[in-house]
Length: 100
Image (cartoon, rainbow, N blue to C red; front, side):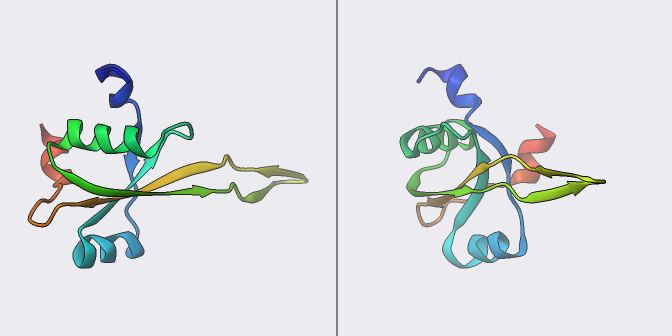
């Protein structure tokens, strides 16, 4: 993939109570990613955007949920989540990146 395509692989950081515990205990960061993204693409995108060394990537396909819109029953979109493990001693600071 070229540089422009790699910049579009990561959609947003996914921060929940579970992912913040993974950040503290296992140096793992979680991102929403494109549904067609592969593990090597995610690894290259994180290394390119945050200038860190990635040691591993785990991917989870999250199914959409059934929702009601009045009488109509609908469904939210399926999405993909990536858990990215960094090499010891490296971190990602979301706030510093947002200000830059």
